[in-house]
Length: 186
Image 1 (cartoon, rainbow, N blue to C red):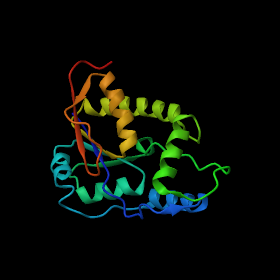
Image 2: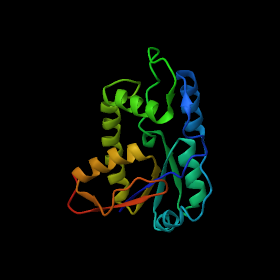
Image 3: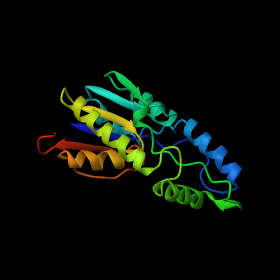
Image 4: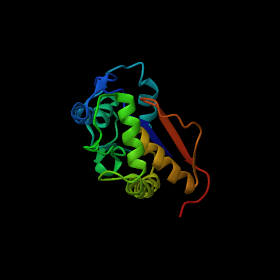
């Protein structure tokens, strides 16, 4: 069994209007943010993690802090290959002041179009390798991954190609998506 858990809600200002420079600072703050400690929000995830043979976690602060709040009994392994699909830096030609949500949509669109250090195609390749690693881990027991919404989405699509199916596919904060093998993997 493979369980993908999205990190908790980051302690980071959301919303507001920003310049390009303010957005760059916000992105750095977001990547370094811990999460709110709301036990009622992560009760289901805390139950699911109890069955883990191993817990894998992204190296970003919000995922690591989420793992510490869930207090798994099994060992935790931190891996950069589980990090979120990165947003590109806003191009210098993007001038003006925009709402945060608009900046994030524009940057994600640029990411899909191949802009950034790790654009969509490269992130998709990383997700494919991550899915293969998770299948390998799952051969010896239940693997729990504490990570990020976009990257979990890409990994779960690849796992589906390998015969792993999820009952639900919701990526809200603290959401735990359980995938079970329905056919033999390559």
